[in-house]
Length: 503
Ligand code: GBH
Image 1 (cartoon, rainbow, N blue to C red):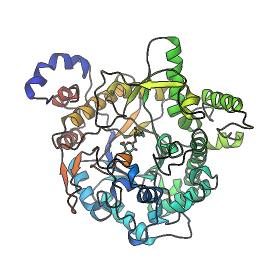
Image 2: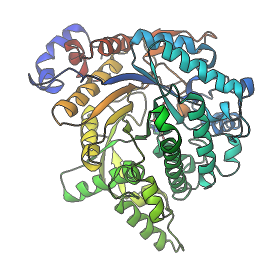
Image 3: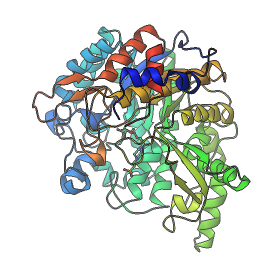
Image 4: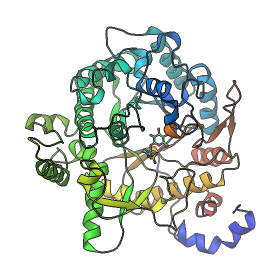
């Protein structure tokens, strides 16, 4: 159903209760709250083999297996941001973004991933991008790793080989040395929970190696160490002069109990620990290490499988201490929620089997163009509160939030998605006392959506992928976000849209 002004007005009474919750709703973002948008190198840059760039695991996988992507496409050209970054910065400026979250392609600056093999042209590209951002008053926020590992390192076992933590520290040093004078917001990894699934499917996220319940936990173990090494390196050698902030972007759904039974409450909590706690607890909790329930269940299942050791590797006491506290803020991606109940599910072995829950959507939750994404704004408020309580009130920066459609310019469903999620963030801040310091819209513009190719669109700006010039065109959502970024308030009109159901 298309939302017209009159439907909006008719619904006003209901909406006042739903979206804005009566007169007490405070629609103003606190001073210092930052607004930005995000992208990732493989999804926007293109120029996959230009100027000395090395091959990444995504280049490699999609050149060998184009059939892994629904529309047979890849990121060879994508938004052509490698050549058109000035256009990206022009639209960021038009939006009034305070910062731009982008990722650096490791193989663009280190073609094999090795520090003795630096590609100066790659360094030059990111210098130009960063300078242009800074010149336009937009802070760069850099993700060091958004999934495009150098293929050379994958050939050594990628994230399953502990040697990767040495290489990652080398890479982080190159980043601090070259860009740390201007980059003050860092994220080591984007969504470990997603890229660990590179080891849970034969045709999924790169490298698509099917070793569920083993390869994914090895990835988790080594990336946590790599994260801590990058953090300590900064602390010891760069923080005093560069004075930036470092985090790791963790993605989480809100895992709502299916019913109000005690069993479902326990399943919901266990699911939170397997989805978010597995990466968050070692870094953010007081005691460090993996969450007890994760440790217990994987150890128990590993033993029952007749193994000599747990599939989830064990941190030494020293390593627990080394990883604990390696954050300056909590970087969170949120898209959707699930209903959770206890159930034996998944391959044997697998993280699903270890977690022992079944996840579903409530049929009333509005759909998007992505099967995995239903619109559940209140889940974000609950998730923020859970993190606030579980990890003792860290500053939370939302590093991704957004919704897909098929690419319409009049994207009212995206307007509704953003305004309703921003309303929940405001409630978390003003009514619940949580510390949320910033919001990042995924995404600045339509881009290469991994296994969904160009079939699902998340941009505030539309990109015409049939035109070699890849023109960027503002959608309705860009206009609304521009207003919010400028006024630092959720407009009344946007609140009306905010509760409209998605059609
Ligand atoms: C984010 O992941 C990514 O950081 C970003 O790069 C991406 O463009 C954005 O979402 C939108 O997708 O295909 O059914 O197996 C969000 C978490 C985890 C959601 C993996 C999709 C695969 C579901 N993602 N998941 S499915």
